[in-house]
Amino acid sequence: MRDFMKEMMEKMMSGMMKPEDMPTMMDKMMEKMFSEMSPEDKMQFVGNMMPKCMGMIFTEVDEEAKIKLAKEMLGKIISILEDITKQSK
Image (cartoon, rainbow, N blue to C red; front, side, top):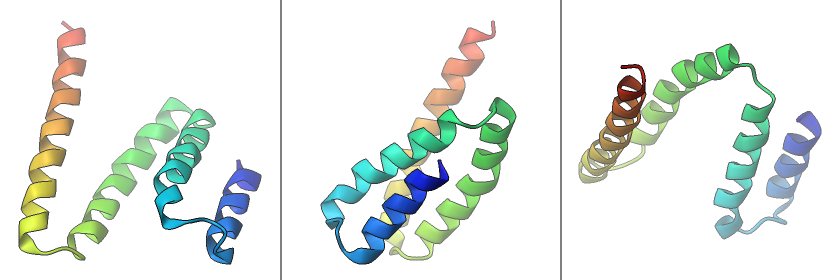
């Protein structure tokens, strides 16, 4: 995984990667990283990083964008958690 991440970072830093390629690159990087984690590590990562990422995003956008993103994220999180709780019944 380290080689993959190093390669992606080198491409980004050298300007070889176009901004429009970033979402695909980030998806690949996250899939690779998560595929090598234990379930406990995945849960710890999400629990620690999600609040940190959200905080960084919210400090950089205006009030309207914050509200829009918050509503969108709440909807997604609620849907995922409802599915999980329905499966446990």
